[in-house]
Length: 99
Image (cartoon, rainbow, N blue to C red; front, side, top):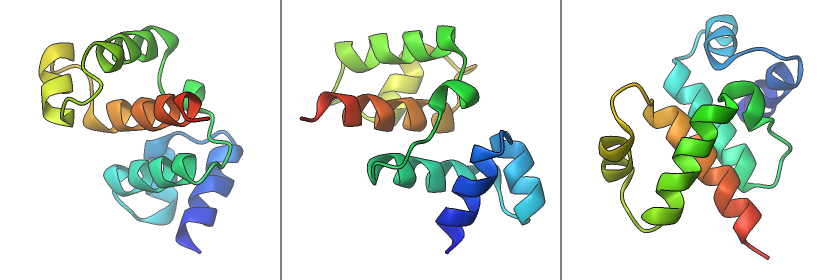
């Protein structure tokens, strides 16, 4: 299963770009795999992928505009934040919020 392969490489400490290179896939695809794995309750170490400062900034925006679109969130955060980082942090944050 392609998601499991991504998870295994992530557990080995590889970055999204490194996993993409090794698997011959795009980084956006790998980020999508990781987002889906987070939502399935798999242990994805988002702190390995997104710095704590960036995570904090993303969470602040999530709290302020929880129902906002990804584009609206990125507009507020600025162009130095990738959609992938926002998606990963959002997925982890939403999983933490659910009972």
